[in-house]
Length: 109
Image 1 (cartoon, rainbow, N blue to C red):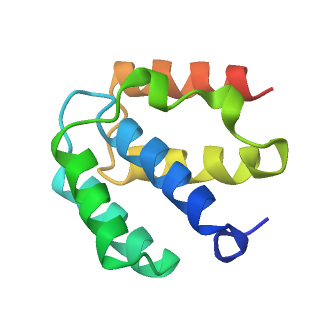
Image 2 (tube, one colour; image 1 turned 180 degrees about the vertical axis):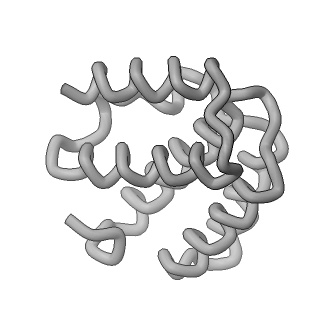
Image 3 (tube, rainbow, N blue to C red; image 1 turned 30 degrees about the vertical axis):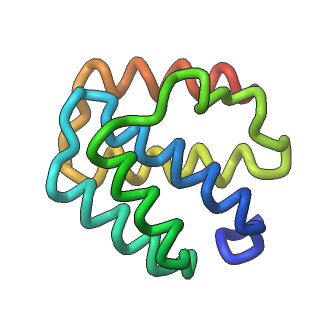
């Protein structure tokens, strides 16, 4: 599965997870914002979708909105790879980020 094969709803679900991981250390770094902006462009999100993503970068999605069990099995590897990339965007892996990534990976298995 590649990003471009995701439906609109799946793209927004991915972006919700990406934004929640950008908040893992309680602060969205400039590099993470740049990663999100590039991903938004690559996914071809429309104006309304882009506005929603900007909101998630200002206030993270609620935990109940990012339930890993709701990610379709065929998308799990792609989601995991993408959230790893956003967390790595600032070249630092805070303990909170590492813990969140480990938990996410466990929940996807």
